[in-house]
Length: 159
Image 1 (cartoon, rainbow, N blue to C red):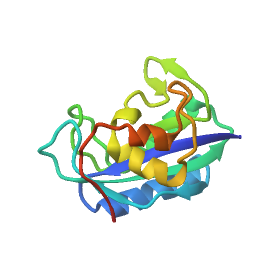
Image 2: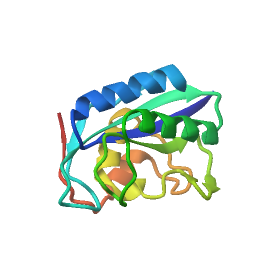
Image 3: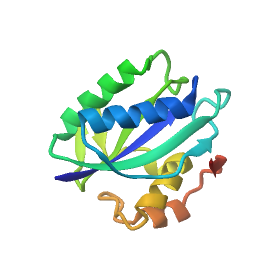
Image 4: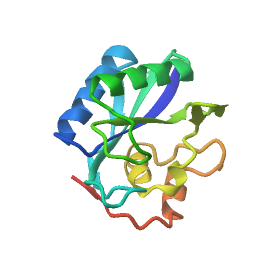
């Protein structure tokens, strides 16, 4: 079994409902959620005039390959009305694979660890809550160390 960390985010409609629906669909289609961070409200990153997000990090264990997890995540996003119209555009749900165990994956449509996670407070705050000692396989630092070195001043508050 591989430990998988996912970041969930929503900034359209009933954000909490979309996060909860995503968790149920992940549990039904991929694996039960073992741990979940608190919910965090965060300013939009990349497109600063967009509505605020609710973000949460969850962890699960699966025997599925990273590619299979991605395929199921994309289907879940589709079911929940995700539309990909513009980069960093608003969305009902966004699900990112942050880590797939300690594996490093570099494929055209899949990069693990997530290539931007070490730069984003909205990812590191909830991740540090549930896995502060997890070591990033490329940076060789734990999540708490990475968070403490972060330069991102985006407002991220626990709900």
